[in-house]
Amino acid sequence: MNGIELKDISKKYKNVQALSHVNLCFKENTIYGLLGRNGAGKSTLLNIINNRVLADNGTVTLNGKTATENTEVLHNFFLTNEQNLYPEGMKVKDAFKWSSEFYPGFDKDYAEKLCNLFQLSHKKKIKRLSTGYQTIFRNIVALSVNVPYVFLDEPVLGLDAYHRDLFYKILIEKYAENPFTIVISTHLIEEISNVIENVIIIKNGEIIKNDSRDEILKAGYCISGISSAVDGYISGKQVIGTEILGGLKTAYILGQPETNIPDNLSISGMDLQKFFIQLTNS
Amino acid sequence: MNLELDQEKPIFIQISECIEDGILTGGFPEGTQIPSITEFSVNYKINPATALKGINLLVDEGIIFKKRGVGMFVSEGAVNKLREKRQNQFYDNYIGTLIEEAKRLGISSDEIIAMIERGFIQ
Image (tube, rainbow over all chains, first blue to last red; front, side):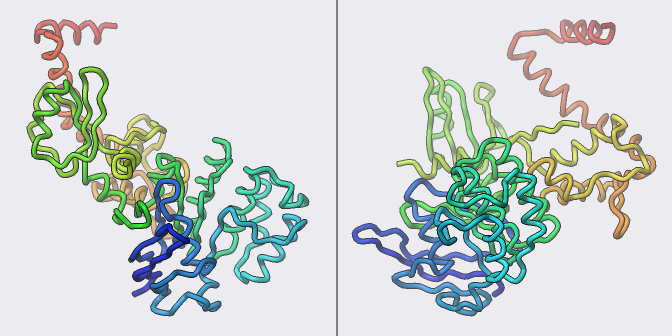
């Protein structure tokens, strides 16, 4: 198949099972949201795909070719995360020059244009940038390398609302004009829920959900009303969570709602964030 | 045009309704070009495939037509077509919910009619 395929990936750090038996595919030209709570295994997964961490077992392939330790294949991937890959004291503009040597598709003009939009001075030393600007700098590199698979591990970490908005818009514009695969790991689910096409939810090192965003949103609904009425309605249904506020109750239910909802209950759709919270709690 | 999306309705439906509103209010006059898929997706911060799906609904209804390599345009007669469509949906979209809420509050049909007449005068 075309795309990245992970088969039976496991990884253990000392006593912690970071990933267990992960099977996943990343198709061409698709935007994925990789969601999981802190410590769920998102970063480990991205590091393994990008050959920065070795898995204990399992394989990563691109279009059938092994990716692990294979420079030819790995040139199609780009991962940006908190790790600084640049030498101490390097300036932004030198980092662009450096990147274009590793990635022949690197578009320096585009990177400069993004620097202007984000008001990042390319004469600054990377190490001296604030947390937000370090993230912005890494995002700019990731959007300029022009490889078919880009992995963004928390791309809005430390960014203010204006810069997050700008980043999403630039990302969408770039993707709309020239599609590539983007895997975004983030905690700000609501902000990207309309951008991503596929959702992967990881919990305690296991993939618990891997589906299109639309399918996930169709998979459940919320019912609220007086507790007793809600309790009556939900008996026998697959409830993934409830919230109580005084005598009122909201239940999150998997499955399709019945056509006749009692008058004293109100129904609403399940958004991605609600779904995520209910699915990953405890 | 409504620029805020909510999560209750599928996004592609909301996009097509936004464009419909734009056509009905004269923001997108008949015969003129509408923004591109990229512009819509950037503006609403949505996946371009979703924007395309929403616009294709209108293409299928003959409200919008595509010119290869140029862009997308509002068809002649689109306003009338949309008026007719919205009139047909009026009962489901407005009257149904109006009566539902009125029943909940104990408002009679005579009272509703009086309110509607008052609304028309104001």
